[in-house]
Amino acid sequence: MPVVIVDGKEIEIKAGERLNAIEAAARAGVEIPHYCWHPGLSVVASCRMCLIEMGTRDPQTGNIVMLPKLVPACNTLVKDGMVIVTNSEKVARARAMVEEDLLLRHPIDCPICDKAGECRLQDYHFQYGQGERRADIRPITSRKRDIGDLFLFVDRCIMCSRCVRFTREISGTSELMIVNRGTHEEIDVLPDVPLHNKLSGNVVDLCPVGALADKDFLYKQRVWFLRRKASVCGLCATGCSIWIEENQDRVHRIKPRENMFVNKWWICNDGRYGYPFIHHPSRIRGVMRRKASGLAAIGWNEALREIEEKVRTASRPALCLSPFLTNEEAYLAAQWLRNTHPESVIALGPVPREGEDERFPGGFVISAEKCPNRLGVEAIAYGLGNEVFGWPEFLEELGAGRIDRVIFLAGYIKPWLDEAHAAAVRKANWVALADLFPSPLSEKVDLLLGMATYAEHEGSYVNRNHRLQWLQRAVRPPLGSRCVGMVFWELSGRTGVYQPRLILGELAAELPYFSAAAGEIPEVGVDLRVNQLAPSTAETQATTA
Image (cartoon, rainbow, N blue to C red):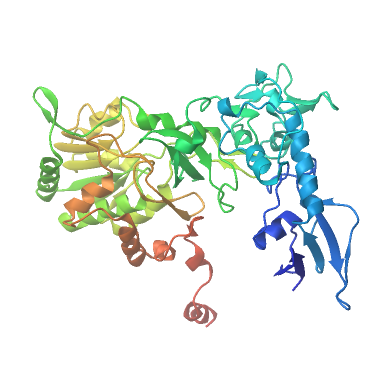
């Protein structure tokens, strides 16, 4: 195998593998600082922060010949016998000069900059910069310009051009450009073409300094107060891997989490800015029972007893599962219903769709299916249900009076049924609903339960490409509300704390579709089709025979 030497350490790379010196050094545990390079964008080698010494080793004699000048690591593809030096005095001096040059024109307004605490210019200055500043500190000035979806602080920009390349190569919208080329060059937009596309928020993540600022997050929190949890976006079937960042049980920011199998390095603005519903004041909280005077709050123990009694004594009860449930919630609910009543049926709630899939030149897809777990919930319903109905068929069964008691597990973020549907559901003599927001149905049910959002519980989703991913709880649900998994954990007679990991193991053992999720779930998730792609030897022999 080809061998590359990084600071005296030999690393092997695969034959035919294309790596630049930054990527090769990372495999050796060596960081090469950089501003303009990003693995998802084209290479421009403009910042010069990644300069290294480079040479070759003769395979016969072992002699090493180094080039006389430094080369940019981002624009240097490695090959067998290449020698890379990142820690020499020559390299250190070049990095310090680059840092000093950038800081000559950069305002020292870190105390008021949103990027403070996660700014590469700050980090690299302390790690690679000069020991002392040799120029006078300029007064704090930073021209703020509204360029559409974001603010541009012009004086902070170090001209890495990441944002420009993103709008050309990934979003394909090309709003950003470089004007006044030369000593006065700046990032800007045309007067009538502001930065406005479904992926625009990603340029804030790409910006290594504080030049591009998020209007939603600006001056709201210091990043060192935020705690982040790895999760999965619950707003469409793409199922982007995300970081949910919170402080004191309040979500303040959502950022993309790298996952080359799903969303690479990006998320759409819907997922990035769609979190305010989590803390919306109109959310259903706690548990309420309908009385003559209206809905009145009751305790959870009383509600659980009523659910168990009503389903057990029904003639033909039904459970309606929405595509917003986690796999563990759907499994516990379906399993409990099957064990409680032999004549029970399962229905699949409506699947929200908006238009068609939105596809971008960089390969990113915003799914038209605006729910996170349709495939997982359907697999569980058909795997465990005695009889399974789609949403239209379920309404027909209700309208005909063939179902007498219903439990709806909804969790929809936007309106999901109208007055006519609610009237059809109400033909059952007892209806329980777990949901997030008031709806035409919530005004008619006998038992109303407040449930948790994707940021408020643990579990797993299966995205449109059959990849199962795990989401962590980032914040607690509103006082009195519970996640559906906790409810059916208790109804099933299980003791102790709700353990969704344990439930996923049971699910993987019972339903073959989930068998690939039997072990530990990697950060990037697991493809549930992996056991279905390669047939067993016995199956192959049977087929050929």
